[in-house]
Length: 289
Image 1 (cartoon, rainbow, N blue to C red):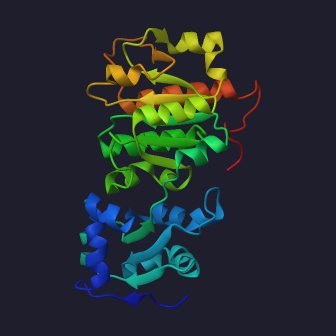
Image 2 (image 1 turned 45 degrees about the vertical axis):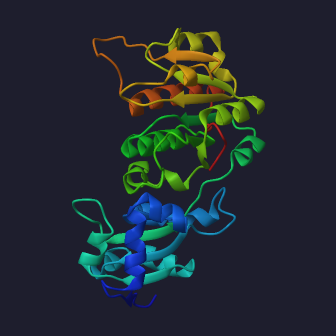
């Protein structure tokens, strides 16, 4: 496999990668950082899965000698995929990481977002729409939940956090590389595009007039569904709720005041996944991945 090329902490490549810690740098270069073996492995594999026609997401890899020794298959596959691989000192990798204990691998990846038209052309059955979600950890966790529930796409509106924020990428646990992500659209435009594709829109809100159990019992979740999730602290504004066909609350059967955003999203998405699955079946919503 060969030894990764050593790189100086003052290298222009390291300086360029550090700029991707900030949103302005990511937007300018259309690149982002993915940290840890799981994320890097998925970035390399992206080119061989659905949506990966443009090739692997990984374009550059910084690996400490220890990490390269622990994960030779990742370093080797990264090089085989055409990524530039560097042997980096721990201080270099730590400077590209926002975790307390860096795992020794940081990849530079190209942006992956797609136009909404690409999503709607595939006639999606389940979509998560993040409107006004500002916390990157929440955004990444919801993306992971959507992936696990077999959703066809995640849409982050222009009022939501950048999905390429390092914390969001970490929280997605590799799922950012698994399903189409749409970014930057106003909520109204996203709702109009999904509705035109035959997707019924449901806003998840604790004050909703409809109960999730009622939606399941009435068969409402059997249709193609787009779930709209809002800010954890203050929910969805009235104008965003008005975009939905119904506002649905997750029932609280115990004494808890409420559910956090990621938990509520998981409950709603899995409810739709169950409604879309034939009785006795175990297929994911959008087919085998």
